[in-house]
Length: 151
Image 1 (cartoon, rainbow, N blue to C red):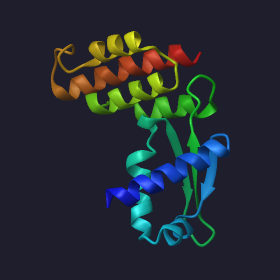
Image 2 (image 1 turned 180 degrees about the vertical axis):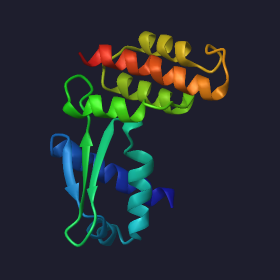
Image 3 (image 1 turned 135 degrees about the vertical axis):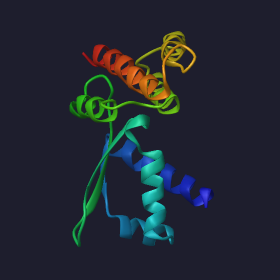
């Protein structure tokens, strides 16, 4: 199943690249094109096009429904503040925080050394408190760093 997921992911990423960061697709049409169940498309979208990986997804259900995928430009994008607010409002796990740092590295917003410093500062080892407090504190640190980076 992961092979078809990889193909769908690469196809969508190529479309996004060609369309300057924003595409609208219909889930059922894409499922027909790849001869898979619509749930496979949902799986790819929910695991590979997440805010933690630098994407913002809008959807509208119904007959004329669509899914809009937006590749967030981390340095000057209107969606970035919303993603920061939504994703980092309650807390974030170490793994998801590392995914965000990976996107920052991929986009050239930070360099390798800055990425390692940021990872070290929000790691479970560095945060000396309970797990729920760690996730909340990690989100607060990451939110503040991101807000500085995008301004």
